[in-house]
Length: 162
Image (cartoon, rainbow, N blue to C red):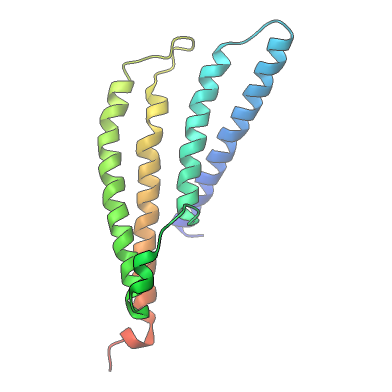
């Protein structure tokens, strides 16, 4: 198993555990509220887990090409140029992810000053989902760039004559 596949597996397990936590805590809150002893702290912890679930799932969807895409320009390109266009798309996305991840680090620092009112957990645990997801998606973009370039070089028309 490659490090990239290991990272993907860890990410999927973390997302599944976060989602399981959300479902379990919502069920717990429902039962305790029905019994007349509501646990209001559950709402804050559920929100933290839900943020992690959403952004880890976004990264997983990006890895599996599960987000929508518009490929109008790709259709106008010659077949031989399409892989390079995909590389260009990945480079642009990588630049955006790095920029967003970098800016979001400031948000995490600011959010660290704010504790959640019921649990005292720092809001930075929610804000940290953004740079983590950006980093995970940037790794996927780099993987996609390397893979696409390797596939493009293997094509017979792109091999140098010996």
